[in-house]
Image (cartoon, rainbow, N blue to C red; front, side):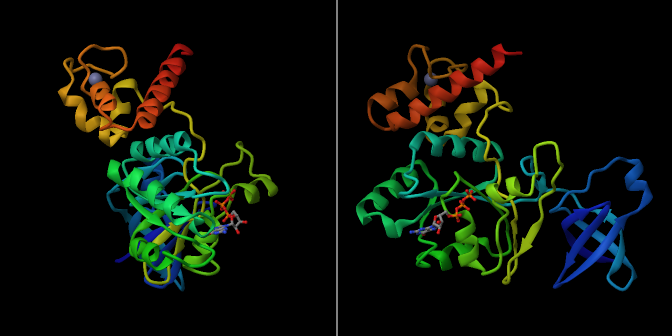
Length: 291
Ligand SMILES: Nc1nc2c(ncn2[C@@H]2O[C@H](COP(=O)(O)OP(=O)(O)OP(=O)(O)O)[C@@H](O)[C@H]2O)c(=O)[nH]1
Ligand SMILES: [Zn+2]
């Protein structure tokens, strides 16, 4: 019995990475009967049936599951923004943060292209998110600044990159390990992967251990899978204060004696973050009306 991780699926075959080798496996019939969908990222036990060929005997329990893209056992999301070009849009950052929080993965924020911005701008940006409690790395993929740091955070983990277009996701990956390229938005359009073609993500192995998902996560920022009451938990600084609100059902909107609104007025919660919260709350309500 051997242990491995599914790095790719293709035509009912599963490519299992075990140490440094790849074994092509299929599933025992009983799994097919159970209609179990084995995902990239799943850990399995297999036996060899020939040179580089095997059969999957057992699927180990999943630690996590990311829906977009569908990958099991992802540990963390690296949210990439650019200090400039394209300039950081705080409201867009907040939307990405909410979706990342929904996935319940560890979040690493990367502020890239710091070579193009002045030091003070970068420090202020980083501080804004650090104060909320996020881990922020200021990097420049082009010059290599901060890349060693990021590489060490990816070690032995399964990581997915996400962030607006043009912020440097592919460049960062290439700086971390030349040749390890993300399948970017543009590329997938070029080869015609429309929304009707199923496409499964793959895991790209990192030289020192760990994997990166080959396609960026959750780029469509719509809030369909979330309810109003849960939204505050995607804003750590709001969730922290919320228990002090007069009403336990407080959505921190029009309710009286709201500790969140008081914290905003006192400057303990950033007004722009609260604004993002209200905007997303309104969107969730709008979506609900459509049902
Ligand atoms: N000056 C500077 N330019 C950078 C840096 N990182 C990336 N770029 C440039 O920014 C542009 C976009 O980089 P990509 O790596 O393609 O960005 P991406 O996030 O993968 O973009 P999408 O594929 O659209 O999602 C390219 O022209 C890169 O050369 C950096 O640290 N500094
Ligand atoms: Zn409240």
